[in-house]
Every structure is written in C-alpha cells, then in structure tokens.
Length: 106
Image (cartoon, rainbow, N blue to C red; front, side, top):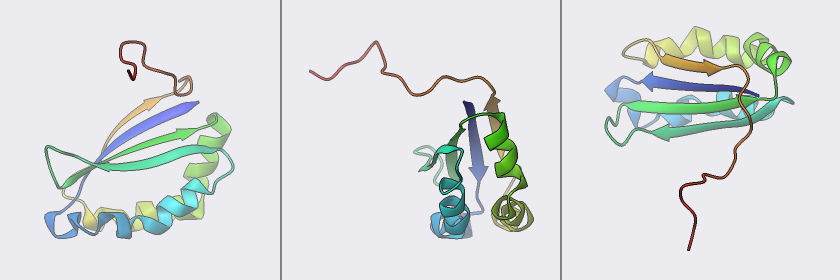
C-alpha cells in the first residue's frame, strides 16, 4: 500500500468551506478502483490547517490517481485557496491498518 499524509495550510477565508471546496476531488478519488481511503481532518492546533490521509493499493493505483482528471483539476485550482505549499509524507510499502497493541477497549 502507498500511504500519503499531506498537511494543507488553507487561507483563513476558505478554512470553514475547505471540505466543500475539495468535495468533488474527494468523491472522485474515493471512487477510484485502487483507493483504499481518502480522509480529511482539521487540525486541533491550527483551524486553518487540514490533514489528508490517503492510501492506494499500490504503485499502479497511485500513478492512476496522479494521472486522473480530478487530480489535474485539483493541482490547477486548489493553490488559490492555500497560504503555503502543502507538506507531504509518502510511504511506499506501508502495510494496511492494524490494531494498536498498546491500547485496547475495556
């Protein structure tokens, strides 16, 4: 699995509407055959930062995502809503989600 985490610094005037702004991009990515997850969260420390956690089944799925029309549209349009470059972590050979050994429900 390819695991990608991206911090998105959003201009303050767009922060409250960010999920609507990326709505089509999110829905289209989640519909891709090789997408495992595409999850947005808002930072609890900075209300103008969103964190995107995304997973793809492998290199072919990740390449297909980057080549998709919705990705190209996002690249062309989302920068107008950002205050700085997004920051990314990309892990090529991640395993799938597993239980955390240190904490269990009781």
